[in-house]
Amino acid sequence: MPKSIQPIKYSTAMRANPMKPEEPTKAYASVQLTGKVSLSQLAQHIHEHGSVYPRDTIIGVLTAIVDCTKEFVQQGFKVDLGDLGSFAPGIKSDGAKSLDSFDADNITDLRVRYTMSSYLKDIRIDAQFEKVASRKAQAAVFAAEIAGQENANWSEGQSGQ
Image 1 (cartoon, one colour):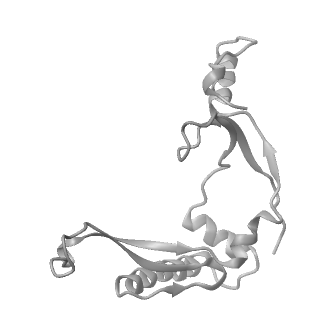
Image 2 (cartoon, rainbow, N blue to C red; image 1 turned 45 degrees about the vertical axis):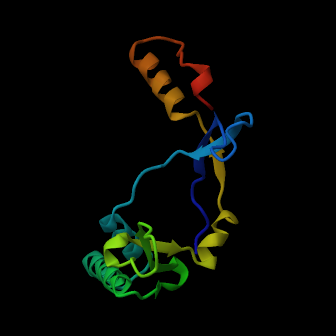
Image 3 (cartoon, rainbow, N blue to C red; image 1 turned 180 degrees about the vertical axis):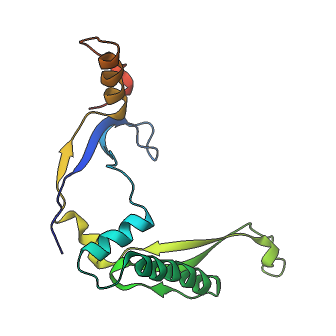
């Protein structure tokens, strides 16, 4: 597997811990997404990494994996996709007064629980990071640049770097 080509960009901001709101705020990191990769782009990337299959075949296989995973999860199976992780059904329900009074009508949602594989859990090992300005600061600089201003202002109490 190739090493990370570019670092993960992040900014920092002061935030309260929602589990301990009485404690002082602390600086935390937030990922600044580089972009989004579509299914078609992923398939093309797989093809360019030496796959003998064309992009449309790869898209077909990936789509079939999604469809079949959904089917198996709806039937109560855990689907193990190796290094990608596993997918299993999870139920959300309203409580009933007793075991006898609980029935399927109490089930309000069927969810998919994702469990990361050990391969993906070690993703931090080869990752690199680059600190960048917050989205708010970037927007202020961009707006100042468009307005022909040499300085940008934003509320420091609400923004990190």
